[in-house]
Amino acid sequence: MDLSERRRCPAGQVVKSCIEGKTNKDWIKESGERKSDAANDDKKICRNAQTSLYRSIKRRWRVEKQTENKKKTIKRINIEKGKISKESQAEKKTSKDERIKRRRFEEGDIEKESQAEKKTIKDERIKRRRFEEGEIEKESQAEKKTSEGESIKGRAVKEGQLQKESQAKKKTSKLERSKTSQVDVDDKKIREENSKGRNIKQNEDNNKRSRSEDPLEEGGSIQKRPCLDIERPATLDSDNYKFHTVLGQGGFGWVILASFRPKKQLVAIKILKKQKNNCDSIAKEARLLKISRECAFLCHSYATFQSELEAFFVLEYASGKSLWQMILRDGNLPMSRIIFYTAEMVVALQFLHSKGIIHRDLKPDNVLVDKDGHIKICDFGLAKENITGQKNNYGLAGTRGYRAPEVLLQDEYNAAVDWWSFGVIMYEMATGKLPYSTSGSILNQTYAIMTETPDYPSYMSEEMLDLLSKLLETDDTKRIGLNGNIREHPFYSTINWDDLENRRLETPFQPGMPSADDFYEFPLPFSTHNCNGKNLKDFSEVDPNWNWQE
Ligand code: ADE
Image (cartoon, rainbow, N blue to C red; front, top):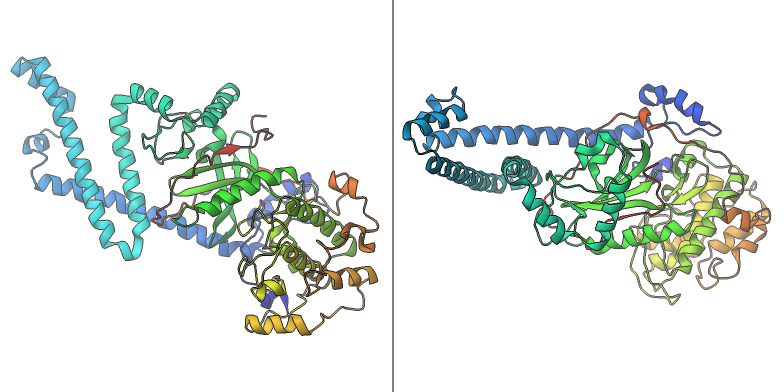
């Protein structure tokens, strides 16, 4: 079975070539090629992802255009209904101030009139806003089938404009109130730290945002777009990130290559749409990303924050390719590389399992290589926490081809399922193929696994063959990983585990880190879907070890 057959259209791509042995200089030299070289391996893959990005940008543009049109229509209706007086139309060219002055002069009762004038303006604005909201509501219902999310976005834009107008008048006291009443202790700390360390002039404007008085808000950490006049920590403000290109997209949301503006530091931002039923899963992922900071071979988060509709995970950017991209490009990988990468995976898996966590979706796509050439296991979306070692029925999780037989059979299972997937990945790295066919029903796949032995090519070393047969063991109680000490297997006889764990071993190749300047900026493809997401409590957080101010 050919890899290209098996694979779905790849979700992840990197807009650059990540070629073995390239130094940072090479990266910079090749940056031009990254932007323009049609022969680039990744370009096709990239095009798919970019197309959806462009589509999203187009949709945004359309929404703005619609918003603009709506505004015009509302204005016209207002005129027709006589809400805007004939006089004001006649006086259109005369400035408001002049009119007020003249009237004041004529009536001679400046104080009274200015109060009345203020009231009228305010009433007019409230009326207009209610009217607009009503209109939008009606329209959004009419458009429900096609662009429910777009209407809401348009409304948010309009509300933002109205808010801007009214906020310009009553700015300071409200700001103070909301600051003291809603800032939770954690965010307060972060803000204090940030205000001490903030030194980036260019971002001052971006960091000024208001916080709504919605009591549902997680104190200070939610971004209620668009709001304009309170300081938010630089790291927790999506305006402080430039968005470059899509690295991955799926049911979960997006992973986007971005850079943190103050440092021009490349990061990968995972954006999940908040929905009614995924809040627990988002919170779990945030927890696991935090735990993963303790292991060098797990992808960790620098920060997490949220807007009304989305949860953002600012992740370290693994600039090397994923194992899946390497296998796709090279077919199979050299033995030294398989030993090194899988050894680092052993450390990562043993760490996760020691914390009672099963990954459940191990596959080459989720094993990335960082700028120094070390692996980073990512994507804890399907992970399960608090596993005691006892088997339980956790459902049919994972990806076709990588699921252990006990998962396929929907039996009770434990962390041994990760060791099965680990075996499949090792086999794939060695042969460029999966050990078992993924065609047919789940029953067929299970039957093949239970009755057939994978094809072990003759070039495979004895040590590898032995280890693979122990990993691809259908009886999970006998499978190596939880069972026996995999570190002592002859396949890893060359590995000094202490050096490996401390990243002291030389990596097979060092991809380096491209410069943020090598990438164009794109508008953020925000979700345009209406979702009934809840605010996530105590979600916003910054890795204390992230030197974002340097
Ligand atoms: N794709 C998904 N997560 C990624 C990350 N952290 N770095 C690079 N590519 C990714």
